[in-house]
Image (cartoon, rainbow over all chains, first blue to last red; front, side, top):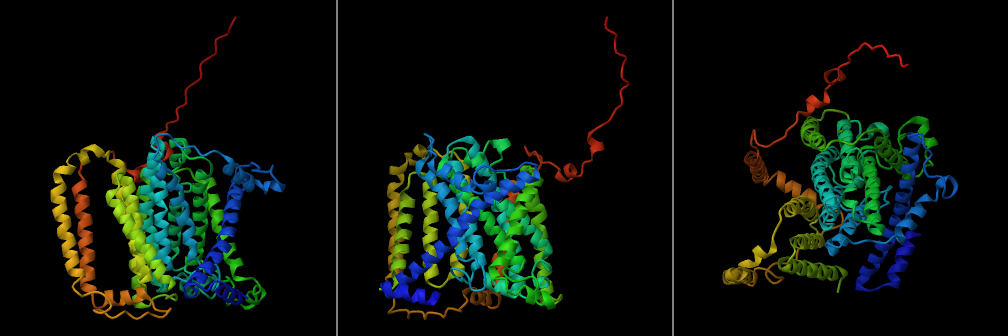
Amino acid sequence: MWQAFVDLIHQLIPWFDGGLADVVIILIKGVALILPLIIMMAYMTYAERKVIGYMQLRIGPNRVGPFGLLQPFADVLKMMFKEIIFPSKANIYLFILAPILAFVPAIAIWAVIPMGDGFYITNLDVSLLYVLAIGSVGVYGIILAGWASNSKYPLLGALRSASMLVSYEIVIGFVVVTVVMVSSSVNLNTIVADQSGGIWNWYWIPLFPMMIVFWISALAETNRAPFDVVEGESEIVGGTHVEYSGMCFALFFMAEYINMIMMAVLAVLMFFGGWHSPFEGVPYLESWFAFVPDIVWLLAKMSFFLFLYLWIRATFPRYRYDQIMRLCWKVFLPLTIIWIFAVALMTQLEIGPWF
Amino acid sequence: MEFTSVLFYVFGLSFVASAALMVSARNTMKAAMLLILSFFSAASIWLLLEAEFLAVTLILVYVGAVMVLFLFVIKMLDVDQSTLRAKFTKYLPLGIVVAVIVIAQMALVLSAGQFGLDAVAEPARHAADYSNITELANLLYTAYVYPFELAAVLLLIAIIAAITLVHRKGSRSKKQNIAEQVSVQAKDRMRLVSIPSGKRKESK
């Protein structure tokens, strides 16, 4: 059916040897991915308020709709009708550019993320590197917001958060190197395909320390508690977001949550077998769970990691800034480098059942 | 015209335009952003040339790391535009001479008939399963392994040199021993004393 649809588009738009038709198809795929993503992000905010609410013995939002389920839409409407205030001394172009630069990379990453077997927008050969590269562009949103606001709290928040992001990017890069060494591919599709065959074939067992390091660095990369130095409400009122209001602020907010979902998916793809069922190769369970589609497994594993975000936020107090830097440069970086050597040795000597 | 040619002209145009605007921008921050745009355009052109590893690396290294550090420096420095522009006319003749020399050199090299389809045959398009990164890795780790390692060591030396230049002992550093702070126990910080409570005065 999809092929028939593609052929139809090609017949309707014959320009540029069918090139324009391909672009239209990619756009349709993009919209089909972004719309659920945005809805997911909206309900992530609801889940966050509900989960943290119950953890703190509160109820959370319960006024708009049944169980407060329409709360995200109320928030969106409020954001859309709020006035956007531009500080008089702000650099207006960069001030507007900053939230866009935070939001666009967060969306652009999803072009290469596979959500199921053969279910992706594009199968880029270097997709894992692409994720890293585009993810590192998101830091400009924070830097520019801090600078263009022309205000001291945003500048402080931007400075410390930007240096934190750049540092933890290095750690994530090293973790990705170990994954690439184990699967000998930088293509996310191949990495997931290599993990087929039950829960003990997933990379979280051979790369267990790297999985922990990746997840903590993912918390830092998305500016979430306990690494939320960019906002730090009790220290610098709201960090880079102080001068932003209305949709400009909402773009930062959406970028943060979409990045959270992206990091959860990345953790699942790299360490938890992507869309593979955990029961592959188990005698009876495999056939019992055979009816479950790929994407359900992916979404289930991803939801666990998203819950982990909220759980951690409700549990840990904020790190002090120098402790964040120590954790990155003096703990994680040596650990990952040692583990790269270990994986290289194991691969070379063919030790272990995994490689 | 193929669609990829359209894309090439779009990216080429944005590459040249952003580079030109970058040089002429008055605001340092704006210039840096335009430089990033030109990096992106160059990466897109490389993608069209099937060099996806190079394209992604350009963004990862230059946009993701180098330009971030640049912006840090720009933010920290209080650059006064008027002092930068004060001697503009004084240096203008020298600048023009340098620019003319550079353009002449480029024109000599580029118009010598070493480039273009009549000098170099058009490279064949690869199939969809061609892996650019595998080919590069095969070359880098076999034929060019010594230059590659040498470059890595050179970079390491540069890092060590930069750190030793900046690192000074006993300066204004307010370094803290975090291991000590983390391993602190309640009994190190707090002392419980029992003070005998006095008798309350009876009020009349």
